[in-house]
Length: 545
Image 1 (cartoon, rainbow, N blue to C red):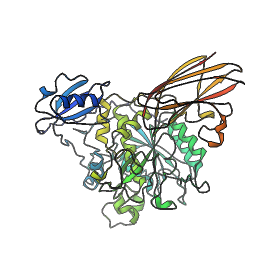
Image 2 (tube, helix red, strand yellow; image 1 turned 90 degrees about the vertical axis):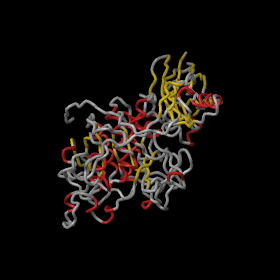
Image 3 (tube, helix red, strand yellow; image 1 turned 45 degrees about the vertical axis):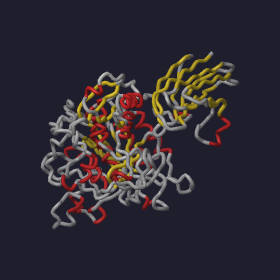
Image 4 (cartoon, rainbow, N blue to C red; image 1 turned 60 degrees about the vertical axis):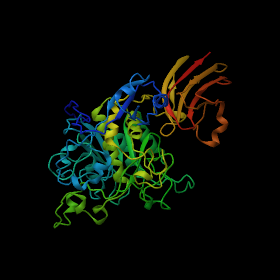
């Protein structure tokens, strides 16, 4: 692994001098155990004081005559007058005014000065990166090609474009401003000279990037997914295993959900692979108005978050922009081929989310991958008709997932209690994917989430004639199920294997229990499944007697 100097994170959030705010407008912070609805009811009882939730932030916005009207309410942690904030620093890069997506994402709104951040390694698995580009050369810490040639040469331009969105120098007076100023690039070239991506090259690249210390992997590539037609569905176990390796090592994996111009119909209702794999953060595209372009693939389950994907400006290989020597913006996509001058695609939405993930890790290096993903998703701005997406329904939807990326909100959320981490992932299926429980008694604390982690599977050895007892205490407000599967089970989500299930506890509510006497010895599988919306931490207790 290439060494690097450690850098202390010095990051200040939202400390700009406030402008005067409207009188009587307050933020009411809630204690972690307080119910927002109970506090809101008390506010109404006190004189019809109106409020609205700031979920996922554990706080309310309240209109009140004075802070005294809010004093003494059980569950209230603080009351503060809301003030308007202003952007106290703007990058001095000359093309920032053309990077409309920076404002849309609130990429710099949390900063009062350009910060010194902990370096974070971000892997760009793509067509290579122009290693001579002045905005990127000093950011590349490792580079390898898995398809021949040099990873520091990019003859397609795609990888250089993606890398610039993440790691181009910021506030250096040159070109564009990258969205993750402290990113160190791990460049894995997987696009062949013919423009194809061998799956084996991608799988090898993922593992290599993890071993090089990547904390985030960006994959602006896709393979068609079609659950209705196996002959054209491109699912690859090789790819899935490589992604699972990255997840197991604590890497945030971000992937574009794909463009429907490569699908049988437009719009296409299914996210592509690898975005449609467990624990991968799938990113769709938004236009300038907030609407979802027709090319951006839809998906009820695997679209997780959206970011700008039209009219994007970024870095481009110098060798390719040199084909237009009269163009003034050498090294940038505005001097590239026609299809890059107003670049669009989910490929260019994904690296904005990868950069945001890197920013969170740079601010709090101890964050786990699932915590980063949860913070990004839950801090996203819900896409609705009110902010430009006429086809988006309130709440999570198939077009934008949890909504529009909001970097400032994600950074602000780090001061709140973080979601619990789950060290047993990925354990989404039977066989080698399951997490092994040793000992005659075992208690496991883990998490589930309807959208990102519905299934957790545990492997337990039971002797012939031995009794197995298992109980599940689920997160409050959730309704999980607990099942036991026989030895030899390959997949808990394959309908053809349903006869392998020997017990199912699916009572209403968050608690489940089952017992079973094993007729034969072997590795049995306990399956925790969340079948309805919800998330949180659960406790699984297992005993054998």
